[in-house]
Length: 94
Length: 44
Length: 249
Image 1 (cartoon, each protein chain N blue to C red):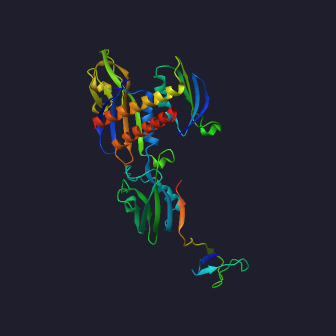
Image 2 (cartoon, chains in turn orange, blue, yellow):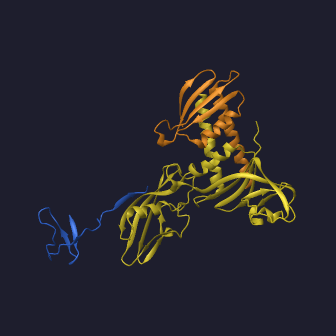
């Protein structure tokens, strides 16, 4: 995973997340949208055949003074909580 | 290049001047045998 | 922030499982499914050195067949990219089976012993040495550990009344697992996948239960289903941890 920030202001962020695909980006987007202070979050990937951008670009817009990079950090934290809980729940069910 | 004569089954070495003909029996049908070296193949 | 997950395993053996998870977002459910298919690595033959192949098939065709033989994969002992050497030597008349493949590591062996590689006639012989590499399904489909992984919403059956008395009842086919009105989970095989068998003469309504998914997972034998699911979760977890670390710097 390699991060390349394309645009960054106090409440907007566009960042390329190289090496990732829908598997992780959609989970991350879902977690971002559940995060307090995030106004909008999406990502865009083009298929390899299109010849253009193939690594996903994450766009985040925040409100209420939250730094978008902090929002991404918080969302990743949220994903980790979710994976940890699911891991435990699945192991407990075995 | 090494071949095998399809009639007398002998190994035949051909050079670029001799033409396609078995030097032992004169037969003109020669078979190219699989090389005896190890061949490496990538699974794709 | 709490995630109340509830996992209930309906059917499970070494290579396949059916389980219901409550409290999952659709994004997370799909993330786990995709991780099971493409991100959990398995061993698969990648290069073959043919010493002798006098069979009727080309080296490349045999190579392709070898790549598709599932190999048991102890993920704790190997890193992605590591290789294991295998070898086979069979002389005709005989059929070369996956079980004839010998390996240098006793933990990495063909998951099935009865996969035919090629039938050899009199005077035909197949001898090779091969390298199996640990890679993820993203690289090549032969490296996939999860071969039939899917999920669907759990469906809840509500009895809304009686069916019109003289009408011929149409079959109402459902597959997987359903939830009855008292919250009981029933495998649809029990009533021949036909709701009219379970609720004869009743009018029923089928509704999706939100955030609840029925997973149907099957592996190729490289490892158990439990391992596949847990590793898939770990792979998402690892990426989230990496992102958090990189963003926080």
